[in-house]
Length: 229
Image 1 (cartoon, rainbow, N blue to C red):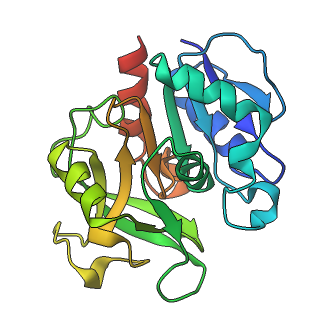
Image 2 (tube, rainbow, N blue to C red):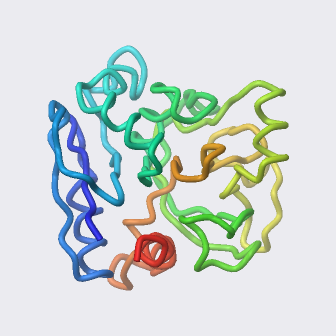
C-alpha cells in the first residue's frame, strides 16, 4: 500500500493526515510537492485541507492549475484512488474531477465546530466500514464549504449513489436546520461516477483518535486501507 499526500503552498492539514494514516495503518505516507510531474505509482493520493495559494481568486482555483494536477487527473482515470478533504475538495471541483462548486458559507462566516453526518452510501472504497445511515460526529473548519450544483447534476448524484455524506442532527434528520453552511441537499461529501475520487468538507483526520475528542474518522481510513489491500 503506497500513499501520497500532495503539499501545496498553504496546505496545513498534510501532517494531520499523515499522522492519522501512520497511527491507524502503521505505514508512513510520502509527501509530494505540488510542482512534481514525475513520481512513482501510488494506490492513494490525498489532497489535504488548508489554504492553497492563500485562497486567492477562489478557494482551490490556483491549486487546480498546479503542475501535479495534470498527472493526478491521468492517474484518476486509470483508477488510482484520490481524496480531497476541505481545500482538497475545492481543488477537485475546480479541476472538474468532481461536479459542482464550493461557495462561501451561507452565513458568510468561517465555521469551525463538530457536526453530525449521515453515511448515505456505504458501498464505496471510502465508506465500506460504516453502516448504511450511520451517524458520525466529525469536525469541520471552512469558509467556503457550501456545496452547490445544477438541478441536473443533483439528480445524477442522487440516482448514481454519488452522495456519500450529508449533514444531519444526532438523530439522522437531514433538514436545513442541521446544515452548517447551506450546502444543497445538506451534501458534505461526494464521489465521481467511477467511484475512485472522493471530496468531502469535514475532516476525518481530526477525529481519528480519542485524544482528539473522537474516533469516528478511523472507519473512513480503514475503509480505504481495506480497499487497497
